[in-house]
Image (cartoon, rainbow, N blue to C red; front, side, top):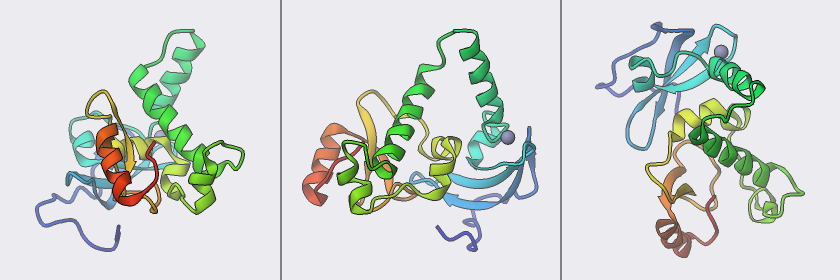
Length: 176
Ligand SMILES: [Zn+2]
């Protein structure tokens, strides 16, 4: 991803626009299905990469600090949290664990052979969630397109077990 490069001519420049607690800083590339990503500054002081459509539709109005707070409150009150998020969050935890924790059983096949989670995603579940979005359906998991490449923008996608097996036969390895 080259951040110095400007947005595609068809992408409306949203720099400087404000959505809830977020102020758009600059274009930050595109998702595999060509949705523009924007780097935003949150009122809480964090930055986040958010899909433009999420901003324009009002679905994302903070770096995640508002949701984290709601999550914390819902946990405090003993209610079940949103399962959809929990599943994506667990995948984020597992991804970081197998790449970053030498005691993880599957570390040798990931971190042990140099597979990393990019700094942005390692630091922020919300950035990772903004890029990946939710799985398109049941049975999908995170697949690295280049099996020797990192968990980073441009190298991950949602794929079914069958698609992953086909990719692994080509590249050798495993998805998440
Ligand atoms: Zn925030």
